[in-house]
Length: 554
Image: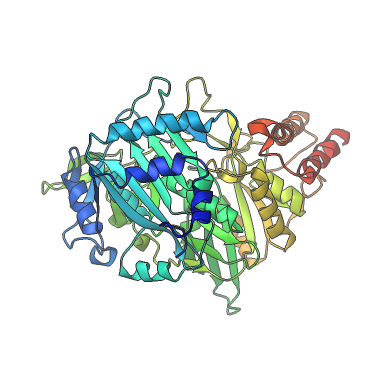
């Protein structure tokens, strides 16, 4: 078995239960008020009958039998209230400063005690779609939130006969236990007005309390799986990965990974077909792990959790929908119910889409990675920057700059328009940042190329999707002619009409220096933030400082 799911010996058991958190959460799964959901048929039926569910009778599920669903299954819509995004401010992680284990253990015990008065459901799934990396995951939620469990089982790989066999022969992760996620949206505590999203990474368990948005339990599960991957030698990636095969007779392949937060263009780039110029194979657009030594990559999820703002009513892509969250509904001319998309009801309307959305989908890519792109929204950067030097490439990922999106629920007083840094576009890290830095630096040392794609605006000019895709085509085909970015050490650019870089413009030069200084300050702040657990090696700071010093002297 991949992860530990039962007691086998006292040594491994005590390691997983070195603090009381896992025992508190896991025990709740075995209460006599908890029923196990056997399969997707049952999960679908429970979700359809759950109060408030809208069965979209004009939107049948595409190829339901192939997904393990009833032949007459329709897309199900379930809406939340005021909240329709994730809340980073509610996260508490064991191992971080100011997270006293015993205090939170008391909160968890009380939460479990009170959930006993509700009927609950639990389900299982596998995170990781290849035998070299599979983690079993368990979720529990109270009656009334059957839709969250159903979407969770669709988003990850529910355990059918095939995956039960594959999991049984998967590579053992002997130091990691099965994932347990306890969800109780009914929970209230005046000390946590935004809710509480509590993680105990090395115990592989979490409690998501007072939070009903599906993205919390989806990303919460991934948070733990990414942590297990990092502990077992993988680079954990909140990104998309695809393989291009050129149609020029060379049979040459190019494997590309893109990293960005919601709204950065990650899914658009991953699923782009480039008008049929290449044979494109998609691994996934959001959740991937890369083996740093052997360079193969594995998808963690069969489905896609996608925004609905860019998919109008009647869009062909909508036939691949399975569930919807926080969208409207209306009737068609025949009286059937259909979705109202494009964020008309609220921001961040979401959907779980089936793997059939990407016709050339694969769950593992063995060809070594060729390039990584950091997707940023930094107005001082031209549409594309090529980074030379492993340390600079790795630290620019560690200081990935972007803007907030509607997928996030912000604490009061947080400026939604401020430029922010989110290392490797992964706000779900529960392990030291240096672990990611060293893994990515190793990939660049081994010859993986690195680029920054600015998918926002360069100064006041928007970088449109076609410009970005054209840049990628030139990189894939090997025709991109990069020149120095104003002499800045380790940085090159493409000359693109309308996006000229002019360091003789003192206002622009100062803005560029300011943004690089923001990155330097971020790296410096990691030495003390979170008790220093995210401190980076000295070469990270030095590679950034050399670029700033050059411009100051120029």
